Length: 164
Image 1 (cartoon, rainbow, N blue to C red):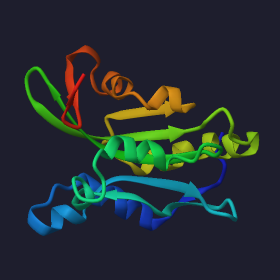
Image 2 (spheres, rainbow, N blue to C red):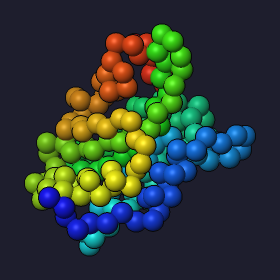
Image 3 (cartoon, rainbow, N blue to C red):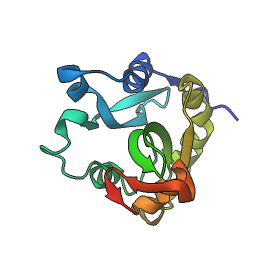
Image 4 (tube, rainbow, N blue to C red):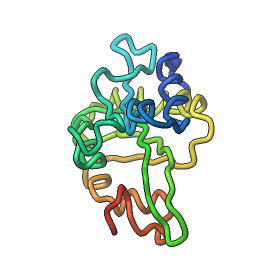
């Protein structure tokens, strides 16, 4: 069921920017995590103002990017998010974008319905996403092991530099 909600050009620009690895000063401006919301008029998926983590912030104003990201999620409303996860398997270090659909149990039913029915619109724009994660509460996301399971299960030995 489609909602008729469309994806803003800004959301697509952010996604394309997060896919591309940069060097030097440009790398610091790349987003590590970002939240998207449905606009007040319920017509567009937009970038949520001020809800992002830049790679340049990591180690400076943001000590633990994963925990900082989890704290950005609103406790009583839905959101879409992109998180650029850094993790290590027994064989290699990797980085992958994860599309997250945040739909906490405490969110209003109308919000859950709008976000659920609009999810395909944003997913279609995010070509090449390997990992998708629907999260229904803090218990599901606060532990890095849950993220590790989404990234490759038992083969993941660390996430964001922290061993599991």
